[in-house]
Length: 391
Image 1: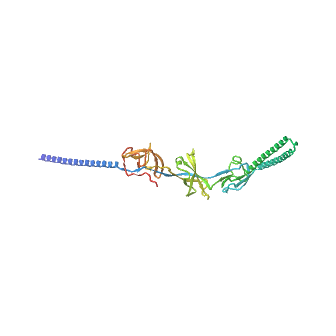
Image 2: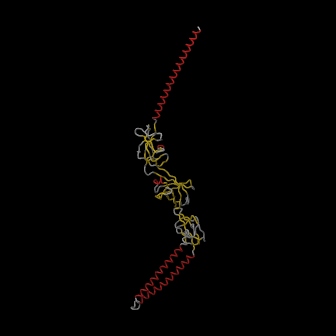
Image 3: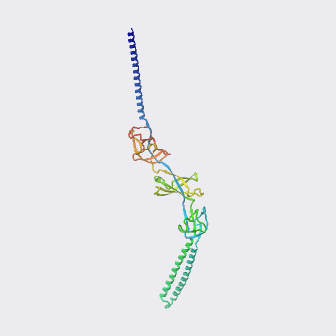
């Protein structure tokens, strides 16, 4: 009996084990199906992602206007250092620093006793020669008058008297020229203003010994500036010289008046580049009658640089500055990516000029391009928007 019970117990246990095994097998099959469904769903989702819409722009031309901020300097339109023309001593000064003067106004007088002595000597020689000439001229006139009586005066005597009075006259003219030369030198003892302006420097005092540059004085007696009319001078870098023209209007400010904007017009372009700076000297005329602006002030100049010719303009995000090339990504008619090498121009406000012989107006470009968009891959473009809109 015990043996039969043991067999029944074994059979029951075996049946239970088989039942549990079947249940586990069912669960495993169900999990596998669920995993297969999830994998299929992921695959479908990836397929949808690969067909995601890419933003594109329609390539257009326009004129990009940029502004270049460069430092400038205000200079007097005319400025001159005034030296004494001859070695002399300062007798009297008529102006000082800040004096406004007119053209031809007397600024200072000097004295040089040796020049006055030379003038007196030249005058006395002139007078002496004049007396000799008058005497010889009178003698010649008498000879000519006497010769009217036949046989009284030989023709040779008449010729000698004529030669003598002509020689005396030539010497008299020479002495007059010598006197005038010394008299002109005496005028050098006066310093006069060559143009209207302001005395910005005075480096001498009464009684000082002065003379030409390097001869008696190392520094000028006066510095005269024309301050009501000034030059605003800037150096325009080589890359921007083609955008600035005569009569273009610019705005500038100075540190002394940071809240004010001044206006000037381009008047003079050097037409050549400075060898050191690789920039073109550009000048504007500035007028200041109230001395608000002064020579020597440093200015912050806003140079407008509008394009004269239309070029391709795209968002900056459409240009890829790769390690080996600079390019944009064009969408071909069969919706493939095509890398197009471009040359860059100026940029302003998130827009950029590009140049390429391979591009045409109306081409579709990827708006946000990158090297991850490989050449030749498929692209699903969205609705194209213009690459540039004029303001």
